[in-house]
View 1 (spheres, one colour):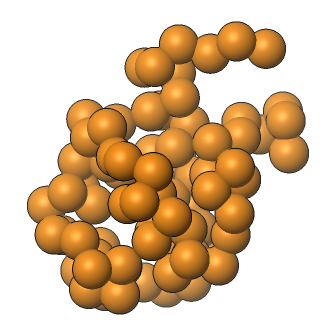
View 2 (cartoon, one colour; view 1 turned 30 degrees about the vertical axis):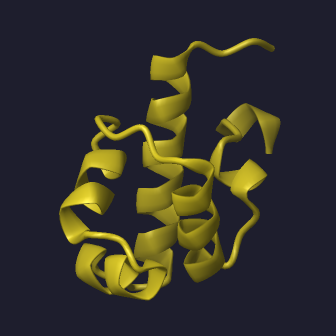
View 3 (cartoon, helix red, strand yellow; view 1 turned 180 degrees about the horizontal axis):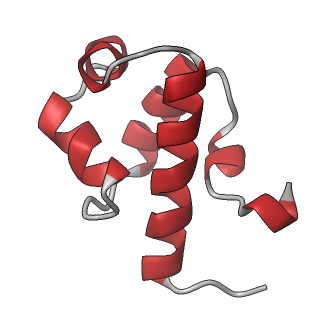
Length: 77
């Protein structure tokens, strides 16, 4: 299924928030561990940011998931 950019950003946002909350991490904790700014994590979680592959890799590592998993909708999991 082909997804447009806004759909992907929404899926990414929901998945990051969900996984971060399950791990009981604050945005600040996630940002520090991923070595990115907290405001950027906030933008990504609000589907405003368009993170690079490097940032996605860092965030996924902290959240203990694959980058691909962050981009999968609930139906695809």
